[in-house]
Length: 443
Image (cartoon, rainbow, N blue to C red; front, side):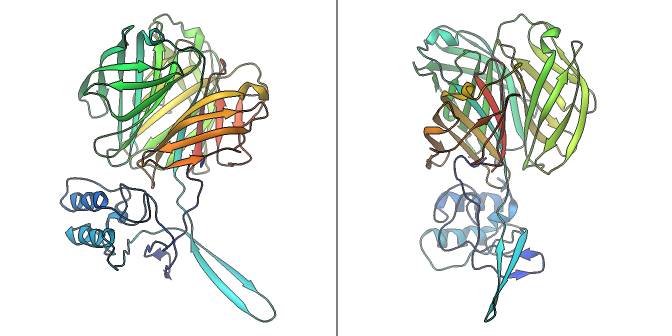
């Protein structure tokens, strides 16, 4: 989805040679993920980008993709690359020629008097996972009290990485628990979560992630959050309230599957409908960002305390998930054994029918991007009219850049699937309670 930075990157000054391309950014400007910009977003590299390149050169950090930290034009990254970056950052006239290979398109035009051929580089299509929570009214701090299950996915230099666990929140916001990380290490957590009257959650305490902010849905059972990790990675958190009373039959019905991978497989997302039987047997056809469709089947079991387990060839390694108190959102994380990528899966239970007016109201968006432009997250409020048009909306990203998304249109089908004529890469599913939507998109 390109609700935020709606652009396709085009690099100028590039000379094509076969299938390879030396990446020379256009003089008009650069963005996060351009040559020598593994960290920042703006007209050119900054000292923080150059420090990251030096860290890569000495083996204490990584670059995704590796080529953007190699402005001298060859691998591996060394101190020379960091020096070139710094020279560019302070305004010296140096060339940055990162050896990134991208697909190209060639167009030809001709008239009776002249002909020309123009070559351009195609933009990288990254993957995006979005959670939209509908805002309610008159939130109170006590709405957070209880047991919550946390699922986290990280993209950027810290990927592949996921984390998950149980957090208990007191009526005053004091929260404690322990998270299990994808590398097997435990991570104790003790913070204070403050809920504003508008449903925005902020975090206080030394264990709080940088820039953490969450949004609670009007049903008070699901929250989406974004943050920046200490190494610059971006993170998406889904919190689901746990009521401790669940039954296997509550999974029966039609659900919508949405997934995002970070790490070696990125950019990749998957989506599609799943039918789950009363005994937990599931089946469906999952489409992915590569254009493929895969038949998926297995067993999804729900314990009495809301824990989801998955068995079968379609299931991730180390899969573990939870169901929210409304029993319409399931969140899980796991590892793709094919390439050790981390994955977050969100399943959305469908209602019997939907109307376009179900999207009307104030919503809050949180999303994360995996792939070339990671680390990247966005968040912000948007007001949607009954016809699906965003009448007011502004998103801020992890670099501080803001984007007005007024005019974007969300079209809701009778089966609960949301698409956008203004953003063809976007596909969402609205839950049966009509307070949470989960989307995948090409970014």
